[in-house]
Length: 76
Image (cartoon, rainbow, N blue to C red; front, side, top):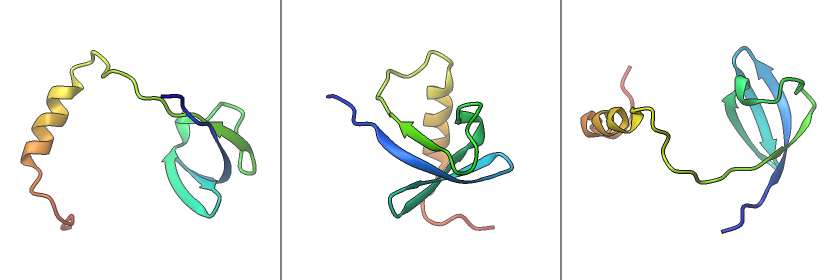
């Protein structure tokens, strides 16, 4: 399936988190994933692709954590 790029606006960068806007939708992502020269007010082309799992052993950890998760809301 061909991926469709999306233009997103960098609304804010607060510490290690970037807030992006896609139309009227806002979402956060780690700021370290932004291009080095991206700043608040920058426009970015966002492209997401499905890839095979990386061979770093995190699949087992994700599976283990998923089994231990009771679901529902987080209680603090």
